Image (tube, rainbow, N blue to C red; front, top):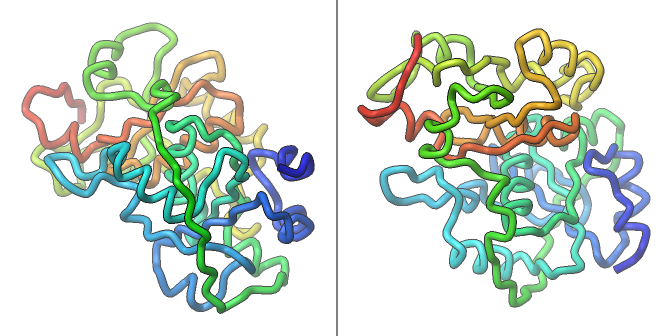
Length: 275
């Protein structure tokens, strides 16, 4: 692997990525909310990933992380190798890209970056897009859950709710948080969770890039989330919280993703809920 690609930061700006597009160790993955975003124009050389493949897709909680078999099949198709540096982006400010990077963290593939602002920032900067499909070069990738601590499950979350130094960041809308909106058996939020909607970490003036770090830390601290805490983040399906997980990482928080999210928590009768 070239030493250059190895030095790419967690959050990479469009003008920085442009200089690395030809590196063979680089794999750019577009995981858009709307598939037509990719066909209308993507970062040159970017592979298309169907966002649905980042979730298990079956069982009572289909939004859980895929099985190792599903992950092995997915990353083999994409052509991932131990030396690949993945740059992920999407068309919505980082939810699905964050979910992909969280998945990579889970399997211990830590060579990854987020293209700040995704296709919106790329276009805003006037950079060239391609409409040509890129075919992956398959590999034989065997996924293992090497960093299970990137995730947190319902049992551990329930157990630790009143623990000092542990907090929950709910990335859903204020209406969902307050129990005024939702499609679950029970509405409301996890007791003690703080609410900062995922869109509030993006800057709409700057192509949906992540907002100024100092401002974000100040706002999160005002809500009671500080970098010395362990933070679990969730939404309805750990899609929106893919971005809050990523932002937590960028800000230096010890942050974990709750993949079951409200889909699991709000559809059970034994989970504590506040409104």
